[in-house]
Image 1 (cartoon, rainbow, N blue to C red):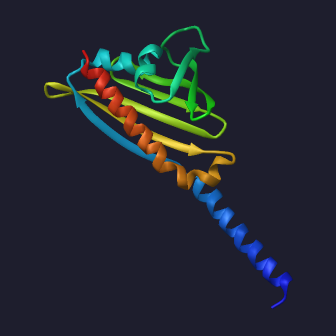
Image 2: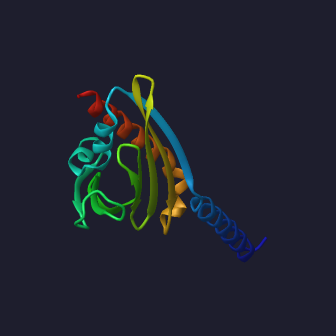
Length: 171
């Protein structure tokens, strides 16, 4: 077999592999989780929406600054600065929907990812259950790496949930 045929086959195989990574990296990844706590619904809601409290449980977040000036309302936006190893990632979040002490739907967006989180707060016997549904969609060049990033993102979310539980238990 001559060298040009080998090169064509290798390039074809490489193109197919990149196409599959792009295709799989563009699909939406979903997670759900919940936990029960003794904390009251208003305390839980505050921890989800108050920037100062969010800084205490969101791993790697070093700043949350308002972009809009109308507080906690549908359409409110914040700039979130996340420090990852030696560089900072800047994202924006927006409140898409909320019902005080019951529901919060946020979208967090960066050039490489869009994350939609839906938090539900409901009575659960003598406790309160906090549920979270999360949908993650990678975009741009991150789509090529998405099949390998999901596990790390889920581990970070587990650490965030543990931190939030600890913060809620301090009351």
